[in-house]
Amino acid sequence: MEFSSKLLENAVHEMSQLPGIGKRTALRLVLHLLKQPKERTQELSTAILKLREEVNFCKSCFNISDSEYCEICTNPKRDNSIICVVEDVRDVMAIENTAQFHGKYHVLGGKISPMEGVGPQDLTIQPLIDKVKRGEVKELIFALSSTMEGDTTNFYIYKQLEGIDIKTSTIARGIAVGDELEYADEVTLGRSILNRVPFEHSIKAS
Image 1 (spheres, rainbow, N blue to C red):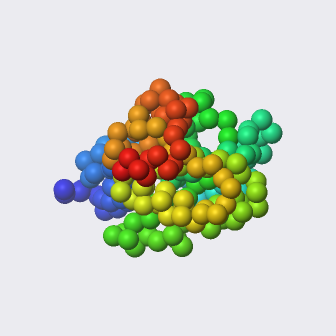
Image 2 (tube, one colour):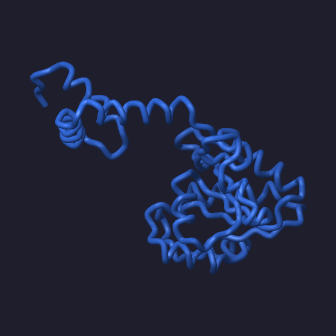
């Protein structure tokens, strides 16, 4: 792709580094920004910089937050005894959109994947185990995507909980095997949460 301006080329290059954005889409977005009032572009730049510099991760669940603890963790109406274990913030948002879950979350920050060099120590698994050991939790719901990496992560956490009196369940397989949680429709995902099954059953079925 030939550019008449180095500034344009640099902007397109940076925009194309975003996931799912190719060079043509990046060019379209950059040209769109050029047509906007200067103030609009400045507002966008300020919002991104402010996000990068000031965003926090909740000290309890590791969700993205504006303060030390996120709004879900500080909400007195949420059930502290049930924790839904998810991969990242997109999964929290997907489940929240169903309005079917009223417990709290734990964001792992990824899945165990030896192929990608991601081990248990790279995720927030230990803080989750520590929370369970303190007796704060009665049920863990595994809500990772039904991929090999998701199943491996679920099983690893399950094995770390051996000997601890806690109920473990997994979302029902209304979510197709191999699907990512964030792409599931709200009705299907909501039913999967409500119709969750004991995790032991999912091991036998796999």
